[in-house]
Image 1 (cartoon, helix red, strand yellow):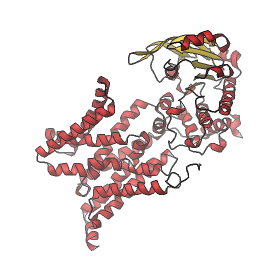
Image 2 (spheres, one colour; image 1 turned 90 degrees about the vertical axis):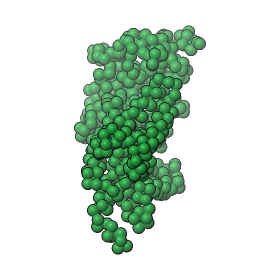
Image 3 (cartoon, chains in turn yellow, orange; image 1 turned 60 degrees about the vertical axis):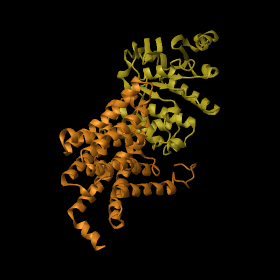
Image 4 (cartoon, helix red, strand yellow; image 1 turned 120 degrees about the vertical axis):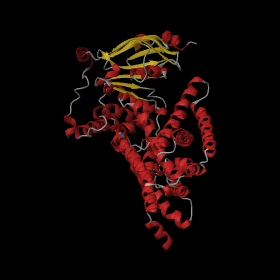
Amino acid sequence: MSAHTHTHDHVCWGHSTHSKAHNHRLEVSGLTLSYREVLALHDINFATECGRSIALIGPNGAGKSTLLKALAGLLKADRGTILWRGKPLTRSSHEIAYLPQRGEVDWNFPITVRGLVEMGRYPNLGWWKRYSTHDEEIVERAIVSMQLQDLQHRQISALSGGQQQRTFIARALAQEAHVLLLDEPYTGLDKPAQESLAKLFRELTGEGRLLIASHHELQSVPNIFDEVLLLKKDQVAFGAVKEAFTSENIQRAYET
Amino acid sequence: MTTFTDFLSEPIAKRALLACAMIGFSNGFVSAFVVLRKSALKVGTLSHALLPGLALAVLCFGLTQWSALAGAIFAAMFVGLGSIFVARTSRLDQDTAMGILYTTAFAGGIVLLTGMQMRQKLDEWLFGSIVGMADSDLWIAFGISAIAVLTLTMLQRPLLIFLFEPNVAASLGVPVRMLNYALFAIVILVLISSLQAVGCILSVGLLVAPAATVYLFSNNARTLFIGGGIIGALGSTTAFFLSYPLGWHISSTIVLVLGTFFTLGYIFSPRYGLFASRKRSS
């Protein structure tokens, strides 16, 4: 099939050595953001690179969703910078995919799985450019890799929670996104669906993507994520799960 | 039925029929946007807000098509932006502010128009006057329909992503703010043309029912636009042929026919009707 001839030249294959050479780094420094004079995030600093998955952990109102939206370029920071590959991140909209919480989406919207995945081609197509066989191939591959072939003509409300999450990820793949920002992707999924999503996360980071997800289920963090950012408006801790995800840090994030 | 065929041969009837088809199509087309944006109530508010704008324009500049247009746009902006301003500067939400602003403006409009001895015009704006349309009215309706249908067609791709999820759209690089303004302008334009057809009280029906009916049949958002247009045109022209023999008011007949279409779909749609099994998919 010709779909397989297309190479992933936009994603850095084989993590660290390549990614360092390409400098696929995400660097956030001094990020401060407020909603109508109410401080939402204060002085966030961390740096990471592609091929990793990061959990944003913290109590309600700690700024997890705000940070994801800021990284997606949906909210403007008061201060600080977000650099992706050395450039301000908002300038590379096709490389960043934002996946909203499932509860924020109107699942009755008249669209099929395939239609939703095709939306990912927008950054490349713009308003009028013709949807070509190249686009068709990319969409097809995204659908196949998320195992949505049999569901592709379903309306999106006729899917399970895990299938809906996979549809979102397929849209991000169709977008050829390098960085995936996911808001509470594990919320509302049953155990088997959570496990298959965790496996998917490892596959996606394995092919060189950077995943950043807000998460609230503490005990599953070591199984799913490589790094963790503990938040409470201020940054409590950041680092590899083994080092930063300590009971002491968790307590500091959740104490009132 | 000789009287009806006589009536049909008159230019006034031909113009009305043409207007029904055109205004029905453009309103039905735009109704897809209104339904997917879930803004039926906001559009209802806007349509009522047009009346005081028309009254003010007549008061200041006399009655021409252009002054009416300017007045309508001014009034819609006043209520739309005014409610945002009140919501920002007080503890009230935007819906509450809109509810106060538009009823106050509407009441003012009625007093103004009655005071200016314009009862007849007031009735036309409240309930429509599609049978009394002049050639120039028809051209304006045609212009508005063409602009609305062409713009929505051209913007289809970004528009559908925006309607699905504004945050996703913004992250994909869809110019969300620009779309918002453009669509607000189109809704106002289309409201002005439906003001002529069915009046400001019933115009919401024409701007909601067609696509809502198609929504019960289709899982393709694009179908909602063209299908809404066809239902709108079909319903309006059917109403035209029904209203004369039955002696019914034409604006009310248009909305009644569209309401009947919707009810039939609500009950009998094989996919999402009352008797369809919800479990079935694809």
